[in-house]
Each structure stands twice: as structure tokens, then as C-alpha cells.
Amino acid sequence: MLKSKLDHLDLFDVRSELAEDELMVRESVARFVDEQAIPLMREAFEQHTFPRELIPQVAELGLLGSSIDGYDCAGLNSICYGLICQELERGDSGLRSFVSVQSSLVMYPIYAFGSDEQKQRWLPAMAKAEAIGCFGLTEPHGGSDPGNMKTHAKRDGSDWILNGSKMWITNATIADAAVVWAMTDEGVKGFIVEKDMLGFTAQEIENKFSLRASITGALFFDDVRIPEDNVLPGVSSLKGPLSCLTQARYGITWGVIGAAQACLDEALRFTEDRILFGRPLSHTQTIQIRLADMARRITAAQLLSLQLGRIKDRGELSPAQVSLAKWNNCRAAIDIARDARDMLGGSGISAEYVPIRHAMNLESVITYEGTETIHQLAVGRELTGVNAFG
Ligand SMILES: Cc1cc2nc3c(=O)[nH]c(=O)nc-3n(C[C@H](O)[C@H](O)[C@H](O)COP(=O)(O)OP(=O)(O)OC[C@H]3O[C@@H](n4cnc5c(N)ncnc54)[C@H](O)[C@@H]3O)c2cc1C
Image (cartoon, helix red, strand yellow):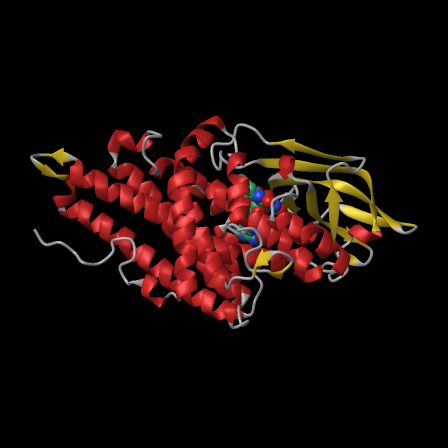
């Protein structure tokens, strides 16, 4: 039988495009995921808990705020951040979500818009996981339209009084601090709300069928008094939270490749071992076409993310480019996960195999940080110059 010399999960040899330090980051995260994370993720998913015992090792590896220069952070480039996301999500989207939120949605806005004191206080602690953060933008009445924000803050002397609520917030109940976006008379501002502030509560959302190995919750603010020192001074418009989302969405484009690779890997093994009608399933034309289609989609996604990372490192990234990649790669990954699940037959619904868990997780990943429709409309707006959201 012909044996391919190509890497089945990297047909265009994207690895050969990586610099020495990028390869080292990928390998060390891959080892951590294979040895430490994967053995815990299935049970965590079944138990609907986040495996918090992994947090110290994630911090030890320098994966929190890895793109930030200084403040005890690793100062890695965008390709490294992407590779971190890819390897973590090969384990489980919940693990990657934890790192994405802490890095791109909490540490990044403090770094980009915070005061020196805020940076000194929070960034080294968050890099070491001594403090966990969450990001509150989405509200119960509709996350796709953040301009219609109801959560608001009013000045009261040198403090602010915050009222409102946020929904679907990753890390909500384990966070020491929430970066919360609220409407004010001076525009949209970011508030660092600390967990023991009076009037602030977080409540876990239970019974999820997706991202079960990730904590999701709601945040409530009832006349929470926030000192001016906890307001991010560098931003007063929706551009603030949207720029955080651009960072996180970039990481997602890489992350979902990892989930898709895990599913293709499982489908390849399963269809080679499964004997039906006297021959391995993988020897049939239909199965080979489906496997080939998975490899085609993964390859396209890898090349898209690699180029996106290079553009990002040149400082030329446009949100529409990130939208196109988030849409393309999430769609590819969820289709691959669902198809892999089907190719495993009845076994495909068992937790013994990874595709069903990835498929269920990807239902969240294709929805959060902008739904597929929202990203399609963002690309459409770029092409036509017309906003068709309304
Ligand atoms: C597990 C999980 C974790 C999350 N973590 C966070 C977090 O940490 N922080 C945070 O702030 N948010 C978080 N989110 C929220 C997430 O970003 C939102 O769910 C998402 O933006 C969609 O908002 P929504 O759920 O309110 O849906 P809606 O905005 O109500 O959308 C409902 C449907 O309408 C479609 N739609 C919207 N606008 C249009 C339009 N103009 N034309 C046609 N169709 C349209 C959408 O595509 C979707 O299909 C998380 C969500 C999940 C599921």
C-alpha cells in the first residue's frame, strides 16, 4: 500500500514556516496538552467543571498574557499566541477559552487602556494566575448589538455607581476581577470590578450542553461603587471592547484548527480499524472523499491563520480580515467535528471518542465573539461599504 510521507494534520507543512522559538512554544504546549490536559478534559466535560488544577501549569508555561511585553509576561509574537491556542483547543475548547479570556479580554485591555498603577497591580498577578479575570460585554437582551448597552455608570463625586447585568461570561464565578463595559455620559467605559465590591454578584449558568469544561456565568451590578482608580483611563468608546475581541478572535481562528485536527486524527484511526463489508472503512471512496475534505478545510484554515498572524505582527491587522478567518475556520471545524462524529457511527456519540465533545464545544465557539452571521456581515460591509446589520 502507498504510504504518504506528508503529515496528515499538516499537509502543506505549515510547521516548516515556523521559526525556532515558535516551534518550541508549540511543542511545549502540545506536550502539556497531551500529558496533563487531555487525561482530565473528558471527565471535566462530563462533570461540567473546569479543571482548575491545570491553572498553575498554564501559568508556569507562560501562556497567560503571552503576547504582552513586560509585567512578568512572555512577550511572544502573534504566531506563538496562535499556536498556544491551537494546541490547547486540540485538548478542549474550554481550556483554550480560559486562556483566551485571561489573555486577550482581560490582560490586553488593562495593558492597552489601563493606568500604570492598574498594569502594575493586575498584569504580573494575572500572568502568574494569582488573579483570574473575566470580561463582561454581552447583555441578556442581545450580544450581537453591544451598542445597545443597558449597563450604565454615573459619576458620584470621585467614584462611579454601576448598575446592570452581563450574561454568558466565561470565568464569571472564579474571577477576582471583571473588566466590565458600561455606558456613561462620557461614552462606553471599562471598569475593573473586584469580586468583593458591595452590590456585585456572579452566578454560574448550569446545564450547558456545550463548553461544559468551562465556567460560564451572569454578572449583576446593583449600585456598585467603583473608585476612579478602577476605571480604564485610555478608552471611552465601543472601540475599546471591540479591539479586545479582535485579539481574542484572532486566537480562536487558530484554536479551532486544533479541535478539527483532533477530530480528523480520530476519524483516520477509526476508519482504518473499522472493517465493514470485508474491508476497512477508510478504503471506500465516500469515506476517503470525506477525509480529504477535512484535510482540505484544515489546510486552508492553517494557511489563513498563519498569514493573519504575519499581518498582525506587522501591525496591519484589519477587523474584517479577522472576521473572515473566524467565520471560515469555525465553520470548517464544526463541519469536520460533526462529520467525524458521523463516520464513527454509534461510537461517535460516545465520550470515549473526541468528535462529539469537540462538536458540542464548537457550537459555542461559532457563536461567541461574534456569531457566524455577524462576521459574514462584517466582511460584507468591508466589500460594499454598507452596514447591513440593522
Ligand atoms: C459559552 C459562552 C461563553 C461566552 N463568553 C463570553 C464572555 O466571556 N464575555 C462576553 O461578553 N460574552 C461572552 N459570550 C457571549 C457571546 O459573545 C454571545 O452569545 C454572542 O455574541 C451572541 O449574542 P447573543 O447570545 O445575545 O445572541 P443574539 O445577539 O441575540 O443573536 C441571536 C441570533 O441572531 C443572529 N443575528 C444577530 N444580528 C443579526 C442581524 N443583523 N441579521 C441577521 N441575524 C442576526 C445571530 O447570528 C444569532 O443567530 C459567551 C457565549 C457563550 C455561549
